[in-house]
Image (cartoon, rainbow, N blue to C red; front, top):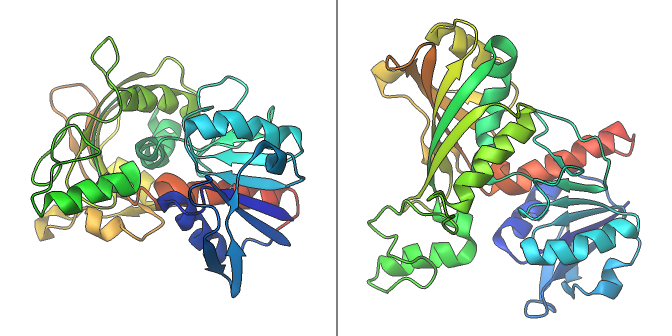
Length: 328
């Protein structure tokens, strides 16, 4: 199997390589791509040195079986169709193709690709960790509404976000965010739309509906950047169709693959960003009734945005395809 990783020198690309190694994804040939700026770097992987190659149209026309793409929307829009036309299945971490009708938007615990196109989109980081617990609730109780408030780590902005936090602690002015993130909270992720929502909030709303296959689901979101390096936290307020209880919800979530239930408030045990960092699972807790709405509940979850929110989910998609095709 010929595997390519695009954006191999970035935060998510390097995490993809770690997960590929940890999960023992089989391949015969591996090619690492980057921009011209990063090309030429040498990366040691599984006992071998790989020189990072510049991604060009000619290189994308080479025969690859699978491509893990983590190089931004404009790069993906240009190169993913070229890889696809040359016969590869592309798993793309950008937002470029997520809402296209013929493109699968996949979280392996939640849905499976139909492969009408050989491009599979990896969802937004906060959406991924949210739909993992939402899916079993949909199956058990039905879902009428979900309101998100996110608390997103700076690593979601890549190295530039981490730099703003770390250098801001030393008194430096921000170069990535419009305001300091150190000792601050920014209710602003991505660009503002005409209706006052940000593009990040629109992503969560639209992607949730698509992944859960609930086009009429009522969804709203407020996405916030917080001065945390890794792991996003999401507060979800969910209104269910069938009557439910806190204990029933806990029971359902405790049995779900990829979830760790941490919900013992008497002993101050609940999901924390520092606990999910470096872990594959989504941590869920603080489950309680929202008395302001009928059959509505608060749920808190945390997950490593570079792992389950990005690199891990992409590799899990690849892993599922290999198993389904008997290539694993």
